[in-house]
Image (cartoon, rainbow, N blue to C red):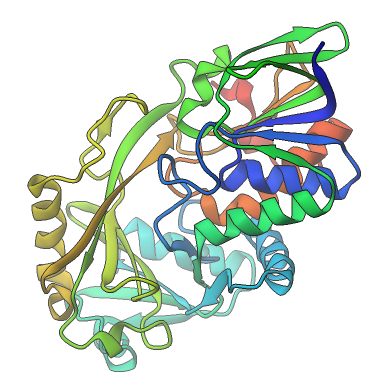
Length: 375
């Protein structure tokens, strides 16, 4: 005999914890299954800070989802005992004619977001921690900031449990199969059945969804924390989060928070596609050199001794847009995957969308861009 639920959530990280919370809040009998601890540092929902920004250079169509995400983060923040979202403002910087600055400005103008267009000198005058090349420009948007990913997961799990959800960690899903009236999920502890299945397994999602094989690419990512000359210049009230374009690619960073050091990384760090169960989790001197070279050029006042290095995983799609959809052949199965290194800020609204799809079969949110059949 197996236990029966309304919905099973496979993977209880940033996205899965949010889905479990929204589902349980609506009265569903929810089981969340997590292979590791809650929270854990093996996937994509850790590292003490994740950027939240509305000036979205990737595409203006993301902004309505971000505005809803902000509402939901504020609601969750109000009931949690530790702050989840710190609003520092956000900086998008790079060459004046680059895609990044132009894209951020376009998103702000399309959605009537408040912003300032700053020269490099004006940026440094306002925020002395920034000393960028004279030819660079920046978009400052005051609603940006950073989320604390581990606490976001904890807060969503707490909400799910208060609403009656069962969350089981250290239990690995082996397989699932459709049944006449739902799904059957096998774990290394035993079987469970449910009317619906939500797959939010991050870098492991393609192992459970055949349609994602060859679509999702897990990628090794490395972050660095370096000692600033004057840590106060890099405090949250004096140093907005940032995304920066230079000839080597895109970089992103944060003020000092929770652990010592100026935190930053390079998008698609060394472009290493990896097996999430078998890759170099320990950062190397080559990782450190790549990141330090950037800091010495663009943030010399923050390029002191290394304090910390950490790896995480991106799970990329070919177009770097998300996958939020039901399986065409098994509509009782909903997938949230492929967040491509820029998804965590959306976790609160992604949870709402996945709950909509699981319980209603549709959502009022505009998610056509994220359909599975585009591949």
